[in-house]
Image (cartoon, rainbow, N blue to C red; front, side):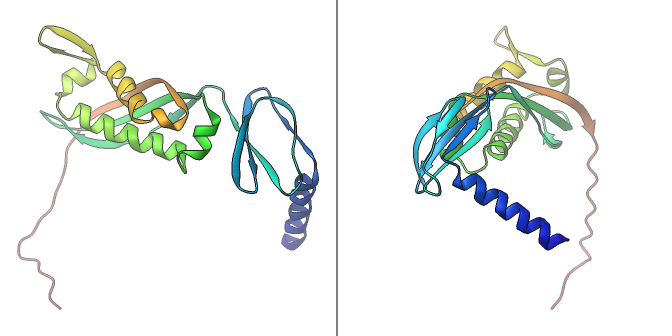
Length: 185
């Protein structure tokens, strides 16, 4: 049966390639490629295409959230385990498809880098209450993270709505090291 499923899948894809049009749904935007080259951004609605020569790829352009995996961050007074969440919206689907290979991973990686760099200079209490005071001015950590991330990924065609720290906890680090163990060849 596995072979029949693959054959049906192949035939449906070829039928899709043969159609001279494509519908783009209201919550999507698309990009049109002709012979592999970017032609234009396509808005929702009925769109013509040349079969086998042109292809229209689509992506959701509604608000999306990305839950970041847990990371361990050394800060001033301890080591913390932090999990973040990033809310974003695709604003330019052409940049989204053409400027970076895997945009979601790139957003996640940049958010990691910015969270680690920003929070490593703070202590646990400042991070826990989500603000710190420097030269008698209070700064909201999440607003700072949002603006730094937006600046870092401005050419991805994405607008950052928020960066939130959803889990923050202290951790103990256990490192076992034995100087007597040596590997010999």
